[in-house]
Image 1 (cartoon, helix red, strand yellow):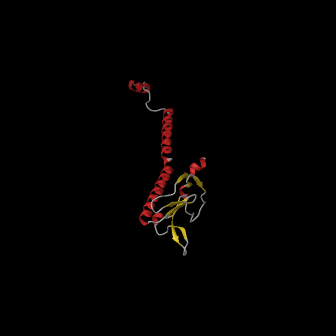
Image 2: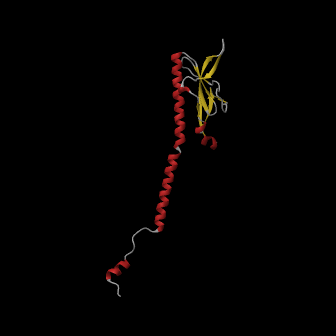
Amino acid sequence: MIPSSAHRAALRTPQRGFTLIEVIVVVFIVGIMASFAVIGMGGGGQDRVVEQEARRVTALLELVRDEGILTAREQGLGFTEHAYVFLRRYRVGDRTYEWLPVEDDQTLRRRDLEDLGISFALYVEGTRVSLLRDAENPGVQVILGPSGELTAFELEIITEGARQAS
């Protein structure tokens, strides 16, 4: 049997498609691009949490300062290594007052951030304050006066990753 001319033309026509090397190169490039996208999006999670907590502390300080001005009450803020708590002076005896955590206001409740991998470094008037590991009442470190003044302080919010890198 002699092959027909159509059959001969089909035998000579090169196959169309991709070689294995071309497919591997494309898959490799797509994989690299996907890994860059994941890395770029993944690192922002902890940064967003830190930024959110910094905004929360600032907003709560402003709230307490304004409340102190309106009520003419002195209030305070205390920090542990991983938490902060708002404090008020309560009368505990005939002539004695004590700084105790605010318990009647849910907004000013104790905030523990250890589960988020956040810790604090506190500087009061330029001097680093040693913070307790954990305490229900760490004592007052920042005072918010009844006329709106407050103790000069700087709060450094440290993430678990930053602590391990240093």
